[in-house]
Image (cartoon, rainbow, N blue to C red; front, top):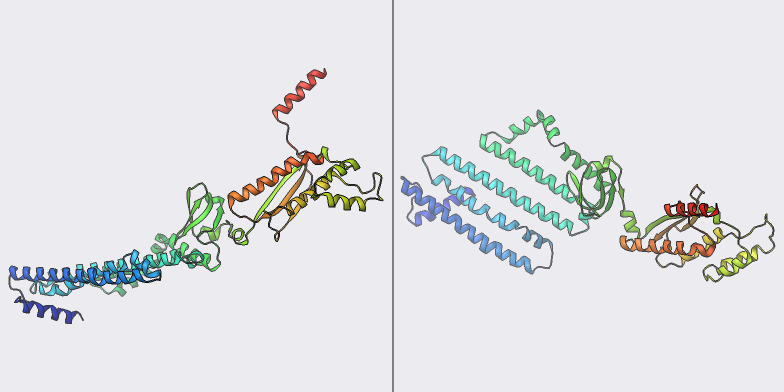
Amino acid sequence: MEHELRELLIAGLNMMGISETPQDAVSSGVVIVTSLLLAIIAYVFVRRGVVQGLNKIIERSKVRWDDIFMEHKVLEKMSVVVPLIVIDVMVPLYFPNEHWLEGVLQTTLTLLIMLQVTRVLFAALNASNDMADSNDVGRRLPINSVVQLFKLFLSFVFLILAVSLVTGNSPIYFLSGLGVATGLVMLVFRDTILGFVAGIQLAANNMVSRGDWIEMSKYGADGEVEQVSLTTVKVRNWDKTITMIPAYALVSDAFRNWRGMSESGGRRIKRAVNIDLNTVHFLDDEQIESLKAFKLIAPYLSDKQAQLKNNSGINGRRLTNLGTFRAYLEAYLKANQNIHPQMTFLVRQLASTQTGVPMEVYVFSNDIRWANYEAIQADIFDHIFAVLPEFGLRAYQHPSGRDMEGISLHSRESS
């Protein structure tokens, strides 16, 4: 094809009265200028005619992938190859008697063509990456890592071909020498190789994807995954800082992924309030009647009174303010529309400690948004602290300086 194109150009030069074998500098200059003009005309025709025409067709299409290719100017970069090919074909006509100069020019042009083709392939890979990001595929699979691996491979191929072209040796000659340099390659590309293997493991096991919320205290990461590349995972923390984690660290070290919480539709509330043991006591009839004013607990109290009617004395079953409060808290949370009804629901009394007896709430909110979740949790415990005195209970709190001051003042007054 190159020979046929050259013959066509020679015929065109002959029609214009220009010899294809210039004998002096003036003739060579005319051939060079003419070939450059032809290259410019070919470039303008392809760029202004073919590429712009295709871009207009792409703009009218309803699919998205061709728009992404247009945004990355894949066709525009490809159009640059055309004038380089035209000049490369015309080089033998420039200096027919200077073969060394012809060889230098053709080698340079071939390198430029290879470089431009590599740029076209890079742009196509970037467009493919953006296409994957716009779909769910980009979230599930580390497409960016694969794209970077292909770029690395293309760069390696370009380097081998370029050195082969300049030195005049076969590419196989250089590839055969890689066995000797394997140790050096492993040292230089250690993170790349580990990152690529880790990327495959992350994708195969669906361990982390773009958009996941992960925590990894070893690297100070607590935020949303923005990018999973060949060697690193980019995490934007909630304080807006950026943490870069080596991809292989996610395979070798422990981290927490909150994706399960996001997909379940519920977020756990697990918090306890410590009750002062000195405030726990049996309820008398008067206290029971006063607590019946709480509609949520009234049926419970009536049922318990009926069950315990025949029990009396210290050894009999009696209602306690702590047990009644736990029953009230269960009823209150079941009536709360912000609590997920299909997930774990517990209000439990834990083992008592020196700071009191913990009453733990273990439920799930049905709103996983951080701000809303915190508001739901705060409202629940605001109510708990406010309602404790109604049951004759008090939250345990270590004595503060003000408490010690009151004790000291009381001692002085007593003395």
